[in-house]
Length: 148
Image 1 (cartoon, one colour):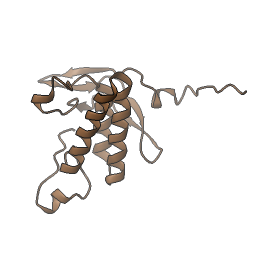
Image 2 (cartoon, one colour; image 1 turned 90 degrees about the vertical axis):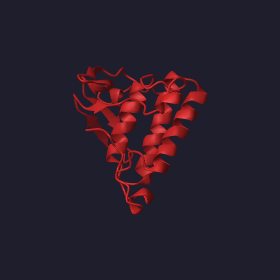
Image 3 (cartoon, helix red, strand yellow; image 1 turned 180 degrees about the horizontal axis):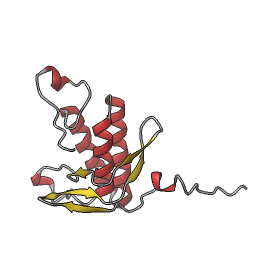
Image 4 (spheres, rainbow, N blue to C red; image 1 turned 135 degrees about the horizontal axis):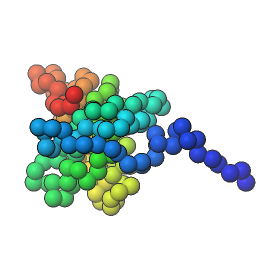
């Protein structure tokens, strides 16, 4: 049987390598990358999240943060926010939500990844972080994306 060798150029893109980040000055609940991070997008392309890009962790209501802490899954939340920011349609948002579930599942229990997935899917339904045409736009609501 042929041995499969991992391509070192691609390994960090799909791996769960550690995220390097710092607290944003003046925003104690926000973080910014100190090292660029590559990630796979829904169309198969590779995108790069630049150094100093800011995000607010998992956007969880205060009463659920004991169950799903804001900074328990930084890779999942960083990549999810980036994919949502650039999602052009429901399929790309769904991919972002599915990858969030995968990332949470690496560092947590099955039930936690399912609760996280339900949370981001509910957010998609409500239009949280949605940049593409959505039912909420017809009602006059603006995008709720809070990132850079």
